[in-house]
Image 1 (cartoon, rainbow, N blue to C red):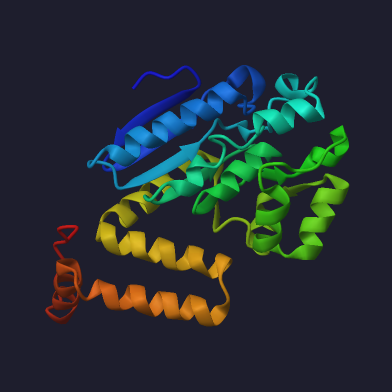
Image 2 (cartoon, one colour; image 1 turned 90 degrees about the vertical axis):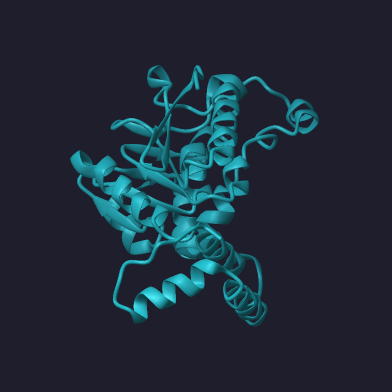
Length: 258
């Protein structure tokens, strides 16, 4: 599909969405956010796609929200427009796994967008931050909330109050990213991870995603009860029977996604 601000490609059951506003380091304007949503809709509806990757350039995943677009807005305007709300959380509604492949800057809205994905693979040149305090405002797309849940209060306070950036190594130690890989091999590494996920039963992967997400939204006891119900439900799937039979028979499973 042809979109102005993103490039979309499908390779081996993996749908790639590449942010493409190089003149502004992929700053998140309304048009770019809309294009991300349209790309996600198309890839979610495509049965040939099992996993989605969201990425940017080697220099920047996304360097923040587009300040030029918002600097002159008034309180009344942002309230009336429901600013940074409509369409901005579309990634979180995606039922297929979404991996953020981050190189370079992921700041402000860019860091928030990466955190909306299911997990982040970072290149060794990645830099994360919520520097909104340096321009007279605070995170507005979930930065203070998701960052705190991922790295804890102390580090989130440090970043949101000082505006400092966190490098890839620190981000991995803190739990913000799952892995750090060399910049030159970022796409190959992420594609390999995505292909591995795509090789498993899609309904089972979907349930696993739901179970992990439930851990952030519920108490431990309710989360365990929810997990147990989803675990039981896998026993209604042909893929569960095939997966366990293949393990017992020491062969590769042939999943049919049902």
